[in-house]
Length: 388
Image (cartoon, rainbow, N blue to C red):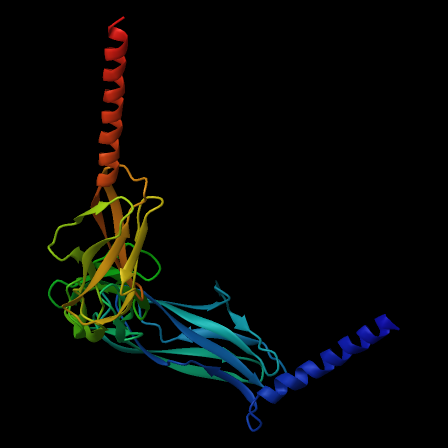
């Protein structure tokens, strides 16, 4: 039963297929036609050119058609190809077409002007003819176009602005196209492959073809917020083309941490809280907001801030906070390193302070007392036992 269903389905498909192809054909058109999308072309002497042809059968029985080319000038070679091979006949099925091509080899010394070649397809009941006008001319002038995919980009001074550019060679021959870009002062502009990092100064593009490249523009860290213009230019022989690109740089905060007097050092006593004035400066081009402060110090130390955070620092402005540093009670006298950090929505800064710790004077007094007691005991012992 299963195989019977498959066989029936296959038979139905075979019956249906011609009907579907017939529906694709124009309802009021019937017969054989020899056609070309471009029956008049311009070629250059000394080169080989190929023209696309097709034989179309609309709703009639297949017929064998002999193919020929007449009117070929002396010294020229005209060859009809089908499937990449020379052919002398074709037979399009009902409501189908056969693709053909006419290859022309024109000698270098051929005279300028227009020649008419006639392609014929002759059958027992049908004869078709298609005149092809071939004009000989020198090289066509170069013509170039460059089109950006996204002509306007936006980012910060830390961004790399990458433009995808499509370069088209509308000339009649392959060209090596030079690449250049005009950017604002101190901006870096380089061309690279579309999928790669190799920098380019020029790219080869075949006649009538398009090639994509990438233009990468990097602003300097000192660039102010605002709108900037970049011009991409391509050139080859006497032809050139340009396109204007825009980039918008948004402001970016930049934090810096220092002390009130500019010295990154402080003094503290073991076990006692010491206040160190800290200055947080915004040297960027946009306000820094919600600035969080934190610090790291040797084990057992305590570092806090007053206030714990800063709401906002305008560009080229600063705010002072107090770092409260408490060394451990057991800290030995000497120099220790403490790092102060500030962060604001992706922007951060840090500075390392040298903290010199001194021990408590009570421990010094206690030490002197212990030494004094030891001396008294020693003197007493000598005085007592020395008499014996």
